[in-house]
Image (cartoon, rainbow, N blue to C red; front, side, top):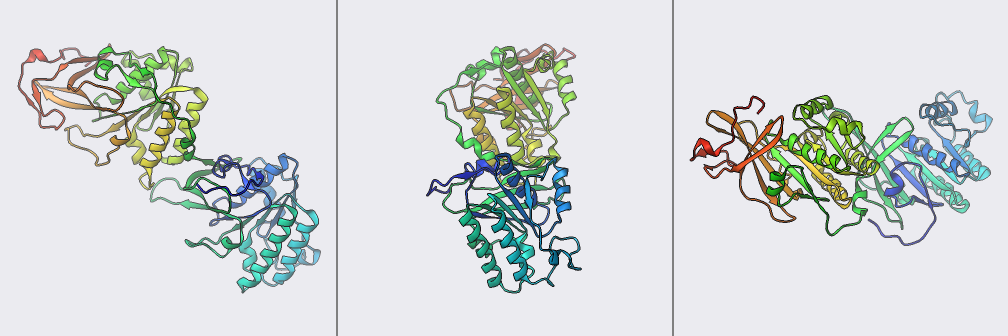
Length: 498
């Protein structure tokens, strides 16, 4: 973050999340650039900014160099907005009557640049708005061949609005990797961009490029353009939660499993359950959801890999009461549309769910689906780490499920996320006496002791059963299994529900 060098009054932007990034809003009475290619939401952001001012009784004005008043009203109507409280600049009649006007408020190059610039200046000076949107400076730049002439006109407008105390947004479609010439004469720059993947929905990113003398949250933030305006997902808010020295131990409701974990898992920690498909990862995670609900505590499950009805049918088959707790409002089961969500939006979704339900347990099932659904995204692990930091500071037990091995026991992915987890539980398939069996091991646990033995685990309609340590086996976790003992040391698999 940048450092604050003054205590200028801040102006709320009206965009959910943007004021958090700007640490309260835009410094009042300054001029800002909103840049991005067509379609990224520059005008939408500008209208939200103006409407926020109308709510508090401020004078708001828009100078549209692209869209007509009727087009602006139509855009606003699509979002459910009313522009009656916003002054839309009216041009002199001789300019309006131009045969070259076509679909814009202003005619193109046939009208002298200076005439239009002066008309803008005079209308602003006459109305004296508290908030001003000029959309778009790029259109104005097309009417002049020299940057010097353009710069002089913008500086004249900037000087006027500064003297009035007007907070001004300029939109521009000109985007470069380096600082543009416009960047040098504005107080701050907000950049919007669209990312088009090879497959799936597009994603949008916002970042504050600069903000003179005012602190802000750096980095790129996901956002969407919805009915009602831009919604911004600020994953960085997790770093502003208080830290707690020690949390209570959370039981799974299964005493042998708790014993393996040294008594249970701690609140505010993250547990990763790795294993092959069918090894019992989701079932193990569901134990903590059910145990929390029995204590009267909330829990949220985010499903990436399977449908909600599939999850519920499995719970019923295992004699779990999760559907009952969902009806009681203690458990929330959310299906995540992996093809239509960004990492920032998912983090935002989790944070809002925890805050609205006061959940004490969150299950992400699975990280494999989370990672595979966003292959074009970068910094996925960093954002996941930030999310876990937020949940930890809230005292929430986070349980993540991940497919690590295929059905043969071989590694399925080279992606290692175990370092971000406080506890790592590994479930494996192994073959013995003509049966496919399951094993469980606690590989690490940062907060306290844990059992180092590898045990057999059996999942039936009556619940989860743990066997004695598999002392007669070697090479279970490596996949190079050898059995050295007798049948008496293994669990009975005659049950048809195993």
